[in-house]
Length: 355
Image (cartoon, rainbow, N blue to C red; front, side, top):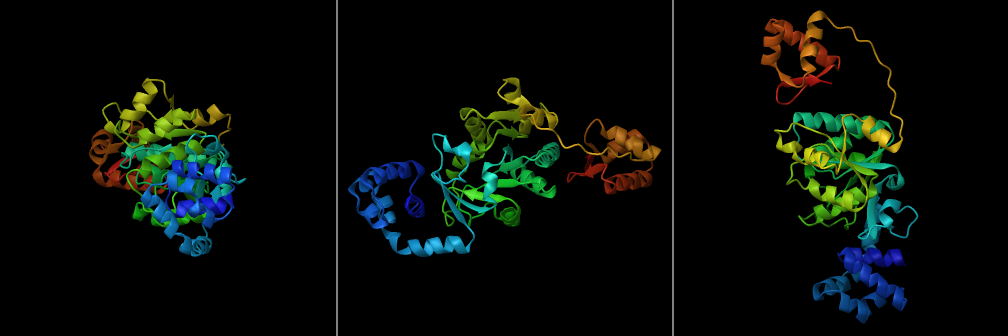
């Protein structure tokens, strides 16, 4: 009955704190039916006039609502359920219920979140994808918020290596935001998990995004920030991570880049562990990294010259041409060959970097 009442309160879009207050009344008064819930004077006193009116009018649609959840493959997990995430249970603002679609067992796996800017630099894209892949390969479940940039890069990278990943939404499961990530969300519903504390029909708002960040932080052993400015929404996840006593990690970046302001500051102030390679995180948790066979790759003298130049970081074609003194046609050919062999990456900004 508790699950039924919580689902009903959620359908009426009653905020989490007021849901807690209502459930106290339910337990005190032994309310075991939705009709009794709506008629209880104590419940009326907790809710605003609009909230109570919404609660009352949802009665006639409740059964069809539950049927739609089942037909859409959406499961409701309440805080008393065995498969409710253990890491959330003791939080002061834990969601009383979650809507989930996908592999719900991931909620109690070894989760680790990766968050950051929606517009990462090429450097940010590279380190995010690399670390997400390697953490997923090591068996950690990658958690993020399905937003543009670092979030979606983290989810996709985990899926690419057959790893597990969880997206925490700022709206309901039927309101994927941004819409451009709908295909990614659908893939995660099949191979990973998508969750929300909001009913499926509920659109995201500017208030729900910061709140969902508490779930991202709370689910996870720790949180990694790869790139973010000091004014980024990532700061909410950072604050929740520290408030909950979780571990915080950050990737250092260019001191002249605004996208590395937050990670650099967190490292300098000793609020976050500095991450240069994936083992900085894995060793922190006593996890063995994935051992990969080292392959000997034969390259030509010209190709090796290019690889040596790229060891200093991302470079454009003109720089490589000037430093290597290779004819344009030879340089183009070498770059194409190295890219095909997976030794370098051609970036959207028409620059090149080591893979």
